[in-house]
Length: 173
Image 1 (cartoon, rainbow, N blue to C red):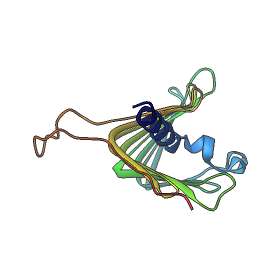
Image 2: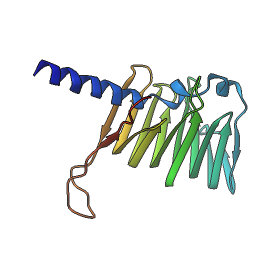
Image 3: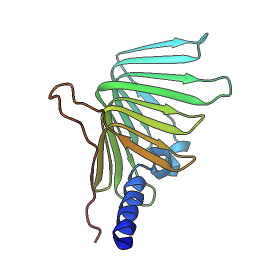
Image 4: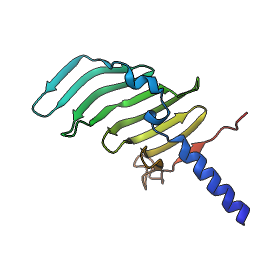
């Protein structure tokens, strides 16, 4: 029984590692690169410290690419950046530090809280790190505390069945 518990805990910890933030695993050099955002329209509201980009939005910073229908970027009073990307789905992809592999994610809405260093993926969320995949209705990662969580809703409204989270962990070479 103890070995079974150790295996379960080991698997849980390994699955938790899948969720490391784009910022934690992404190319460190990306942070020093300029951000380029292309969209059909852009609205800057200096009174609210927000910028809203709409229509086939593509944000690029080094190896990081975010695609969305709408991207809203805000800066709080302390100067921290916060963003919300919305799409069907909205996606991100970034090369992992020290690897040729990528971390990728998609959801209907992705929120980043620069002050708390948290990423939230809402509705039909999926994170792929290398060959490993985690799927759920909601995925969050707290980069400061290195805590990840995946959850699913109690009922899938289309089928009436209980929704479940899923992890696919490929064996390592």
